[in-house]
Structures are given as structure tokens and as C-alpha cells.
Amino acid sequence: MTIELSRRQMLAGAAAVATFPMPAIAQNAPMKIGLLTVKTGPLAAGGLHAEEGITTFLKEKNFTLHGRKVDLIVADTGGSPAGAKTKAQELVERDKVNVVLGPFAAFELLATLDYLAQAKMPTLAFAGAEDVTQRKGNAYLTRTSYTSAQCLYPLADYLHTEMKKKTAATIADDFAFGYEQIGGFQRVLEEEGGRVVKKLWSPLNTADYAPYVAQLPDCDAVCVANAGSNPIKFIKQAKAMGIKQQLIGGSTTADDTIIGAYGDEATGLINTNPYSLDIDTDANKRFIAGMRKNYGNDVRIGHYAACFYIDGMVIEAALAKTGGKSDDPDAFVKAIRSVTLAETPRGPVSFDDHGNVIMDVYVRRVDKEGGKMVNKTIKTYHKVSQFWTMDPKAFLKEPVFSRDYPPMKG
Image 1 (cartoon, rainbow, N blue to C red):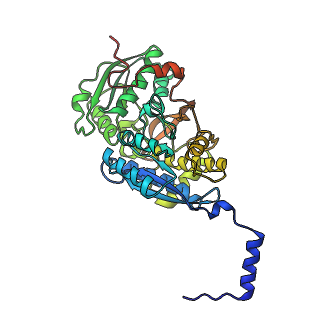
Image 2 (image 1 turned 180 degrees about the horizontal axis):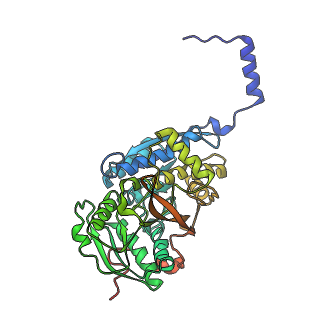
Image 3 (image 1 turned 60 degrees about the vertical axis):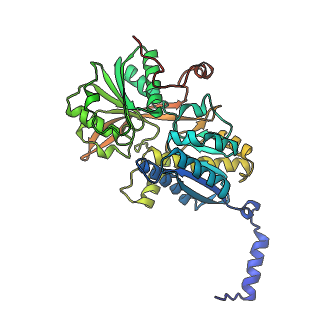
């Protein structure tokens, strides 16, 4: 097809270029953002929410951040360590990305950690594995989501201080995310004078929780720290078997993406989360509207999408500090870690000296509204650190939370 331009059109175009020169950064190659997420397998639902979050932000910005076009390259890890490592290598070596978001699961993050650090790849991590921003931190990783225990500290404090309950049993999936959540919960509850009287660990693929419910001792509360569909299965079975203890849980127990799968058995469940649909701010309203515009009114919106949406905000703010440049990884990471956002869908966001997010944590109660189960925020803990109220140096001298640490008290 031939396009003919009149002399007047050509002159007008030349005058426009002469009068309004394009900024130099626009002549550079687009910034490439690599997303390591899970699109197949049992973790796919959360992985897809992650993609929806960052895509919604970039669509709002017309895929242009600080005057620079952005390419989003999505890599499906398959939910395995080997898959995550392979996809990380492809993003770095083949696609030449400037920053990596993710990966989604802790075992994927641990499998890619050393490679991404050696490649000097700025990484906005999602998975909660505690030590990657603690004893094994590296200069190129910044966690924008939350550590495994970061939402459990306020949960323990709320249980003891506000609800006046002193004893708790716990159940969590039998892997690192479960151990670290319960470790943080136990530490704070016991420091405040309460006690964890029993810890139960269930395999990730548990179908029948009746044997675990049967082991629950007499106590004030049961802390449920399972992930995926497991908390739904546990709570349904526990209530059906007649337990009377107060149910509480962390970020994956009653996230807004799964709350609709509960029935009346979840009434009164107390849970903590780094995001809540009912946050009444313009930033959250814009986020929710954008998600529904892109994915329909029935889209499930929760902390997965919110965390990755905010990754986009962090990148944009960092580019503003570097003049739109991302070619120097050390300078770009320094800019990322210096970002302070007063308004995001999650509330204020900043980073500590170890590269982990400092954030608000929302205590919610589950109730029925309009025939559906919903979370209602009843308290907000502001500026929650990965170290809670503890001295970071003293905290880091102790072991990472594990299946056996902190130990049970006799």
C-alpha cells in the first residue's frame, strides 16, 4: 500500500518535530519486564491473578512508564523449581529483560535466587520465603509482597490484645511457607504471654482433614495457615465436626479471591491480609475498576493481583528517579529500594534496609452480606516490618522460622 503526503502535510510534520523534539529516552529500546508466574498446575489460579494485576497497571499507563514504552514478557514456570530456573534463564539471556517480577512460589524463588543475583537482575520478588530478605539477602532482590510471617505477627497480637485469648493450636501445610507463618505467630503470641499448645502439619495434597481436627486440643483459638483450597476444606470439616474454638488465619486463609467459596462455617473467622477489597481509598477504587474493566465484573480480586499491580507502581517511581533509565542494574535497584508510595491499593508502601516491604496489614472478620461471605476490615496495623517490633540485628542472630523453631514450650 502506497501512502502519499502533500507538501503541506510534510512541512507541518517537520515543523512539529522541530518545535517538539522527542525526549531522548523515547528513542531507546522499550523497557522489558519479565513476569515469572504459574499458569498451569495447582498454583495456576494465583499465578493468573498475578498476571492480571501487572497487566491492569500497564494498561492504565498505555504500556508507557515515565515516557518509555514497556514490553511485558510472561513466562509460565509450571509451578516447579526446574521450570522456574529455566524460564528465569530465558528471560535474562534470550529476552534481555530489565527487571523480573516473581516468581510465585517459595520453592521457585529459592531455585532462581542465586542465578538472578549472579546475573545482576533487579528482581521484585513475590514469594514469602523469609531468609531471602534476611540472612541470605542479596543486592538485587527487593520483596514487594510480604514475608511468610509478616501478616501473622499482627494476627497473634490481635488475638491476645484485642480478643483477650491466650492459647492456640495451629495447622499449616507441611512446607516452608507453613512453618514460617506459624513461627511468626508463635513467637509474638508467646512474647505477649500467650501459648501455642499444639502444632499440626498437613501435606499440601491433604483431602481429608478429619484426623487433624480430631487432634485439636482444648484451647481458645485455632490458627489456620494453609494455602490454596486447603483452608476451605479444613474449616468446612472442622465446623462440621463441631469445633467451638475461635478460627483465625493468615493471608491465604480467607483472601478475597477465595472468600466466595466459603459458606456459613466461616462466619466470625478473623484473618490478616496485606490487602482488602474494602479499603476505602481512591487508589483501591481505581485498581478494582481497572481489574473489572479488563477481566469482567466477576473477576476475583485479592492480594495476588494487588501486589503485582503495585510492582508496576514501584517500577514507574524508580524510573522517575533514574530519568527513565534501567540499563545500570545497581542504580536501578537503588532507586527501587528508595521508593516510598503514600497511596497504593494496599495503602502506603516503602522498603527497609534489607529490601523488604514495610506495609499496612488489615485485620478482617468474615460475615455474610447479601447472601455472600465477605471480609470486613476491623483494624489496620500500620507500617508493619518483617521484624515486627524486634531489633533487626537481634532477630537475624536467631534461626529462620522452621518446623521446629521456635520450639514448643513444655
